[in-house]
Image 1 (cartoon, helix red, strand yellow):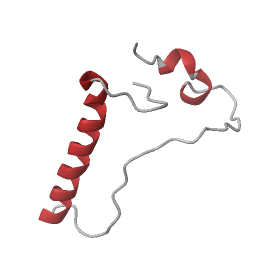
Image 2: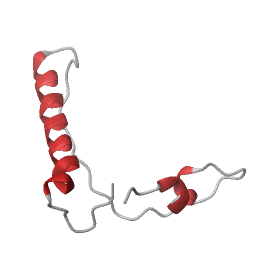
Image 3: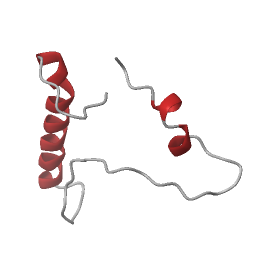
Length: 72
């Protein structure tokens, strides 16, 4: 079942009239570290690897594997 973040996590994503302090639970992300010109070949390679990892993780449930805590 699709995770409907607009309904379940309104306090995080929908802006309020007044500023307020929001506590966010731990989340996991892929991260690229480095510095330099984003127009160089090395950056393009890193983005390609990041895309491949993200796509593989996104397709895991369709292959019958669902990691613990997975929400899509």
